[in-house]
Amino acid sequence: MTTIETQQAQSAPPKGIQITEKALEKVRVAMVKENVSPTEGGLRLGVQGGGCSGLSYNVRFDTQPRERDRIFQYGDIRVFVDPKSFIYLNGMTLDYEETLMNQRFVFVNPNASKSCGCGSSFA
Image (cartoon, rainbow, N blue to C red; front, top):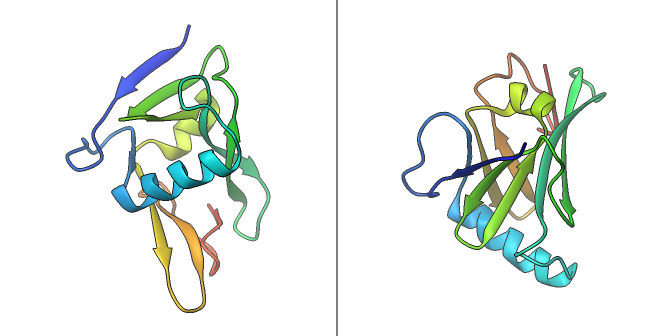
C-alpha cells in the first residue's frame, strides 16, 4: 500500500520530508528537461551504502511510485521515498544552493551524526 502525505513547503511540520521553495523550483525545471510527467512521475529521494561517511544520498527522477513508497506532495511536485530510506530521511529538509563555485541540492538532515565535506554522504 502506498502512503500519500501532503505537505506545504513554507509551513511543513518537523517530521517527514521538507523541501524549500528554491529546491522545488529546480525540481520543476529539471522535470521539464527530463520529460518526467508530474501527474505520474516524481523526484525519488533515497539512501544507499557508500560514500566517505558510510551512507550517501540518492536523488533521481522516477516515472511512478513503487508499491511501498511514501509519497509527499508539494503542489505539483511529488517526492517518492522507499521505507528503508525514510528511516534515515525522516525530518530532513532538501534545499538548493547556488554559489560561484557550486550549484547543488543540499540535505539538511538532523539524523546525520557526521557528514563529509561535499555533503553527499553521511553517517
